[in-house]
Length: 144
Image (cartoon, rainbow, N blue to C red; front, side, top):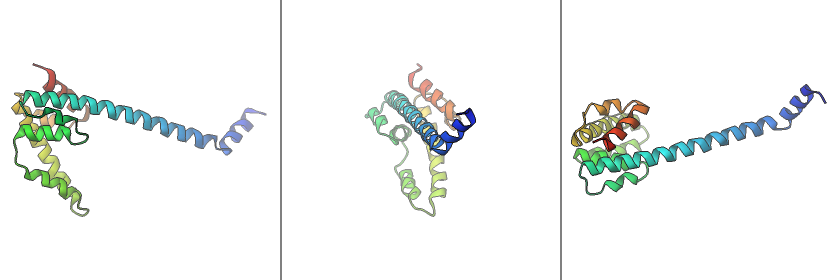
């Protein structure tokens, strides 16, 4: 059997599909590992920020998906009504507008959170850059 026959036989018998499935599964595993590592890092960072801001319950940072937002919200001492925007995100036709407004409030919360722990408020704008935000949260949490 020649190499060309072997190649065409493996492709027609599902070898290519099996390889593609293995590639996708490998990517999913890597994504899950990175997501867990980011969750742990951000939870530690926001718990430390919560302690610096003298919050009563900095361990709320460990709540999946909303923990860092709760810490930023508590540190900023803003009213509860922006949380109603989360409900608006669930309404199908108006969710893009509510998502944009909620994003603006997240920046405001972070600005006030950074000021509360004696960091420049404009860091909240830099936190819109994906990797820079991880660095700034670490600096804000652990640098004296």
